[in-house]
Length: 470
Ligand code: HEM
Ligand code: PLO
Image (cartoon, rainbow, N blue to C red):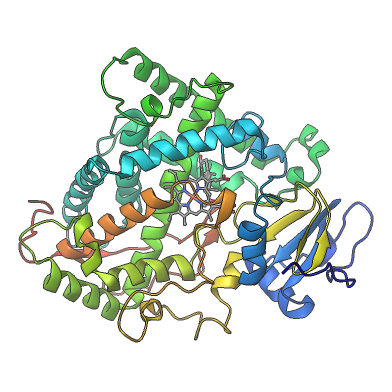
């Protein structure tokens, strides 16, 4: 039942030449909050001009489903931006590359090899569990004094991706790992921040602190990853494919060395920043809600016990843990406005005509905080993901990985990691706030992902897990 395009046009913010609607977008709020506020005034579907670029913002889940799923093909393009073009050598990656036959092939190859890893052999589970063991040992050796869990969590998650991509891992304190963490952070803080060069590309000719920082980080990344790729090539043998680089068939039609480098860089970037950020948000919320932590631990004690490690096959027996993970991704989506989409053909949203080239931002934040669909949306309440019978229920307005042709390619990997990390951590230790320490700040800081500010924890081993691993 296709609705005819309505005559009324989408409510639009005022605009002036060159600047577009920028003078009305000030106030210093991060985009997801600003857009939620503007949606109250203009309606859940509104438009503005980002400089010269006509941009539509979608704030409810019906419209999001149209853009991502029903007419997903129409909106599967990505805008060209100065920062992401630098990051990806002109769109030779997956996330920021515009829709094209080559992009489709590239995405399919990477997606298939991620899926292969997840199926059958249980190899992925072994990789994650070995990283979990060293994380637990490291956290529990941190002593009883308060410390920031972020470096240990980041290293553990990096090692999972590093094994998947290169069959290699980093030891505690490895200098190369510190470099990876530093350049990733630099890129997260400088890419697609709505900075002026992404609006007015000609501005790249002027000196710009943020852009030079981005360039420096990219140089470091390229040097490091090129070396790793060469080592990897040198160790190539005819046996079984070892990792993503061996198994994704990246020598296919049109996939160049640049694409291979970008695949590795993106798997590293996306694989680390998203999963570690989500884990840290959940830890921050558990410090605010010790009763939730207690309940997860009770569920673990009753269904797994303390004698053996948790594994994938326990998942069906741990519904509350799943709810905690979902609630973490709802209340603090790592990517609150997703990556910008662009209309590749004339299309429509909610019956309003949209012309080709329109930028579309899906504000997942306002979808995940809509009081019509979520009771007390600002409250961390995992129970909202259970139905009356105590079974898992996934509401239709919950889309933490997006949907459709641009859905996250790492979703199954991410879910597996979040589950194994969180279940193992809470089986083996408890997290508490250090004496006198303030509760973690829940506002966070927005780079290309929304990250929690650093916070401190005290960990105490649970009975049987004094050393962190068996
Ligand atoms: C895209 C979420 C983990 C790789 C995305 C998008 C979201 C997302 C919201 C954008 C969808 C859109 O623009 O419409 C998440 C969350 C994660 C996670 C919440 C973990 C908690 C991962 C991991 C990987 C990954 C582990 C890979 C190792 C990608 C890639 C894209 C993407 C390559 C771009 C897809 C495309 O544009 O075609 N993710 N992600 N993500 N994600 Fe994830
Ligand atoms: C993270 C920093 C890396 O150095 C480069 C990188 C690549 C892919 C990006 C990722 C960064 C941030 C999170 C992104 C991911 C692609 C999909 C994912 C944007 C910038 C999300 C959550 O949308």
